[in-house]
Length: 250
Image (cartoon, rainbow, N blue to C red; front, side, top):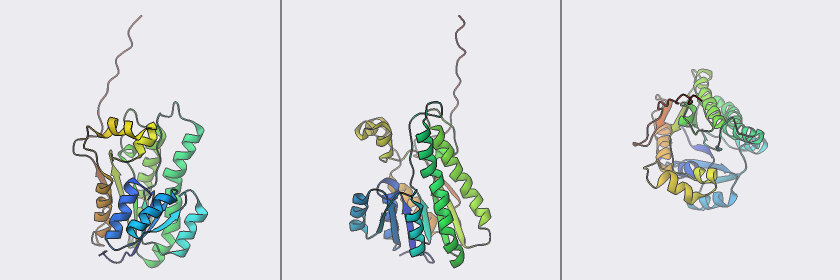
């Protein structure tokens, strides 16, 4: 059973990975769950399994997203949809920048803007933003634009708590390290190679771990706001100190 006063949730990026695991977990809690993603076939399978309500659309489609909030009272918004790319700012493309900003940052801002009027009017609600350790730490091999978009959502999460001061609306940011999802396969174009390179020899987080983290935050007593949660594999650390050698003198 769910903890009142929440009864409905909207999960973006719901067709696989963290999103799909979150839909399953929230349905276990008794919530009506609206699942948003572009892959209708996967969404339909998830609906058959869980009873969620599907919306096959991109989070960048503001008409489609606006219609959801107009037709349904959404108590919990899970901003999970995201994209990544290989490379960094020195070799990225205009299309890569626009794509990452559109999905990872602009869509989160727009969905939050759409969700808040109803939450404020009802004086209840919870916004959960899934970011990444990439939004807090710089490390070699990370995509610069991806890091910047996740840092933007981190800042949004902090500012929202100021904007909503005095209201019964909670804001939670959950920042995971490596999670075993299809994102890595899409990055390098081969899921089997991604499995071998990133997961076979490591105990990475599973999508269910993040779904349980979300469930913990939203079922906490209303007096308690889990404002920030950094979730790491036990065997992974963040940060590090690298020192480049001087070039050899000719």
